Image (cartoon, rainbow, N blue to C red; front, side):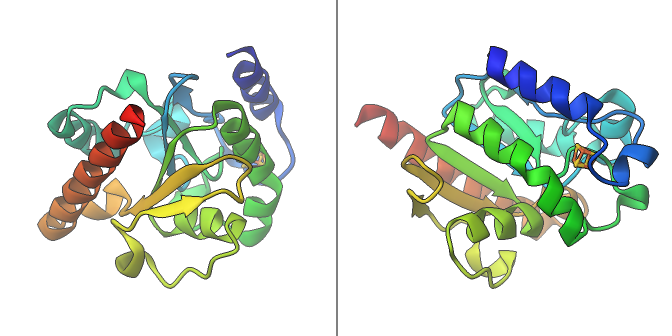
Length: 194
Ligand code: SF4
């Protein structure tokens, strides 16, 4: 816990990239430091930037709804993003921002060492795939697949799915998101027994 708080403190003071000048509040991430499950999104949006917390806007409410449906409590998991500060007008993260910010994410993951990493959307999936030395061919092709990863430094499963923001106004994606989370839940339960 102390290590995660130390990382969060560094993030709050961080000025490594230009987003430090436009953000209101950095969003280090939050949740259970002993969680077996970590969700990784793209970057804070408007409400996350206002409140300094991850997934608190409309996309966050959808994620909460789906978590409830699969029987997972949000307080039991850890949720964070690739970038810890909001890009202006929610534009895509730039490669240079990802490069300078992701050491924070890497350190968070190393402390938590989750059994399952669920990547939400193309940016977090592309980043985690790059750590696994895997080519990323788009979220539509890889969502709901289960990848075993050891190259992160410990053994875990990586399960990509859609970003809840993309599923807000798309019923089909919402169904896919639910199915992917149900699959993840069954892996979580199986791996708990082994
Ligand atoms: S996005 Fe990351 S690297 Fe850039 S200022 Fe925020 S915490 Fe620092």
